[in-house]
Length: 261
Image (cartoon, rainbow, N blue to C red; front, side):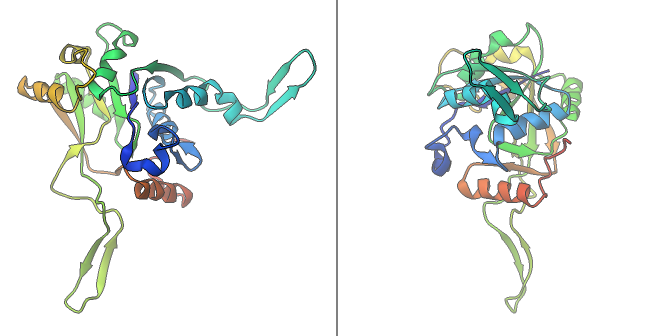
């Protein structure tokens, strides 16, 4: 299945990074978070990507256009007959990446609408955001979607706490400190969605419409929104502190989304 990734937002809450680059290009362990998301999907066999570009999208184009230069040792002949030799191979040689300009200021519904031509007529597709990492079982979510028979399946996750959680006794002693606690009761949309082609019928050509509002509300009204519950790791990268947290996990060898070899 094709994987559609929303990569066009401005990421204003992460201004420390996004003033200079698009949010999906913010590095985790030296690689863009977008690369981590794509590696995760590829682990489940989904290697055909459609990237919905917007704000500073040229940087994402540049990254993939020069992917060999970014990942391999290179020998150059500086004579009049230019020769380039890439010495290494990489694990992404069987990927297909479509880089689609969906507008600098478009909202998410319009971005999805703009890439309809890259999805085969009647084919389902995967959909996610370019700023969150998880351990969601992608293929299990696809199976759940197919069994439910609805137009869209949203991964339901517990939101990560914005602050550390402590358990303190009467004396003031701390017995438990969780840096990123999960809120047990609530579920939110964690991205990592599965969509039927009929989803495009719920989208308009209005660039101001957010997918998470009118289209999702209409899907709910029509009984066409399904959920796939995920109780494991899920972490967005909305703030500089969250970017630092994800980097620490990677540097400490504790990144749970790192399932590839």
